[in-house]
Image (tube, rainbow, N blue to C red; front, side):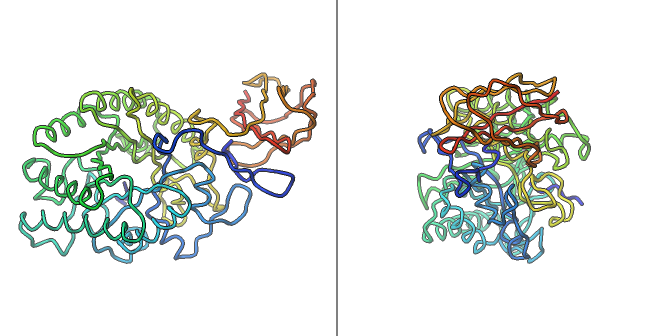
Length: 439
């Protein structure tokens, strides 16, 4: 994705005022739902000196901040011979390997997205790498195999075996135009199978993804994957992009509620029709519409989890860290101009989505919720003493904190504006987070 034509709410939590308490997954690793971030810009952001801060204002590495937001997967794009252009270049094999090693060192899984171009490949352009420009189709087949194998084999030799590999990026119209256009399925199927064969030759455990844009458009997906089936294309997973912002007419605010059901229905149909797992490998919402983007992500995660037979595999945000002042205007990140993630990214948090259960959690309720009269009641079920209660707004700002008795029976006045908030309670041993709506 690049359309330039152109609470874990906080994981650093109070614990005796000294240390942060990590939240653990209860799911087994092999069944872990993918909560991912595409960070293809990150190595260059770091090289240009961009500083990242967690919601507490502490400077940290971007990958650590993402991990603390419960992101468990990093997606990296690969260009063939990229330029040094700040936003349209880089993503070389060397940079990809370096970032993959950083991600794996933090316990994160890796997905590799092959563009088979020197820069962006997407629905509007699938330009051959300059070095392949004069090659015959027979040579292009060799090029795809060799490039795919070389990158993945280098990664494996360096100690990283990607869990997933995309053969092409948003390829409804095909790849390596004009030879691999979807108007010539005989050619396109051979190119896709060469990429598949190269990935499996490096490691048979790698899952191969074929990725289309417009994840809410069922007819588009049926047409493409019916042709793929007819031509014997080999793949493991169907990847989808979903950007309400880019749904025609693009560039204006659009309500995701108008298309979210179509996304869910399309994923259900793909899983049933072709017997494949499905994954939203790109999603994004406006950085200025934090609450809407948060709600959209929760809805997308919910639709993916609802795909029958566990075939909804995960959701990946595209360039959440790609803050607009660095990118020159990209509007769909989850990062603010202060260098901090916005609360939209907290849609991936355990308590928000119900993906997993906390290993240790303070058991408390808040009511009424939604809160209308500004008075909030707390009920602690199985703890004693006092709890440090903090309330954060949707942008991650601390708006209220108070030490209260766990036997408290009196309502606490809030005096907060209408909106979505996150209530964090910590009794020194356990912690818990609840979402609060104030009307």
